[in-house]
Amino acid sequence: MNDREVSLLSKVLMLIAMIGLMPISAFANAESDGNASGNSFRKAKKQMVKVYSDHRTTFYAGCSYGKKGHVKAGSCGYKARKNKKRGKKIEWEHVVPAWAFGHALQCWQNKVCTTRKGKEYKGRKCCGRTNSTFRAMESDMHNLVPAIGELNGDRSNFRFGMIGGESRRYGDVDFEVDFKQRVAEPALTVRGDIARTYFYMQQVYGLKISKKQRRLFDVWDREDPVDTWEVWRNKKIMAIQGNSNPFVASVAASVAGTKRAH
Image (cartoon, rainbow, N blue to C red):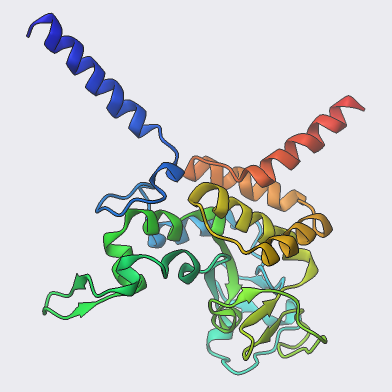
């Protein structure tokens, strides 16, 4: 191998190394067979069990749950609205629903996948098989929280917003859903968490957020600031996934700096 070939090989190897260090956001507009995150939704859920091992509390309702995911309804006054079976266990909920970051993709809209029997299909399952960006977003642990199964199902892919009145359709749980308007209103204690998750998904993956919803999330972010658990959760996920939510980390760093200054 001559000097020119050695030089060319060195450049290729350097380029490969640089690509390996690229953030997930660099793949935000790609559609390929690779997995930019190196993870899967199934694996992410198993990892989230570890993240919440010392904080087994459901996100929307604040209910305690056991090691196997069984909801302790009495701990938060939860009563099933309709689906008692689904209300007995937690499910790993996408704060930003899969529909929001997947429905515009070709794999969601068109039948580009085929089963072993030759049947064509599309949608979330197809995107999970063929689109690396979708898999990265679907398995991103910063966007996953434990939720009572019924609440996860009722929220569906509805947008978050404010709903008039304070109806209690889930016992004492402060969580409302307007099925006609397709809106879900969470409790004040998690509104900031939701806002910062949306901000993260927008920054990392280019998620589109309307101006109206952005204004709402800005208010939620101020009204429900980062708390201790959110900081620890962020650190745990970073240790596993390799990246942090800057909208949580920056606030934590600022508070720590202020404490040191005093």
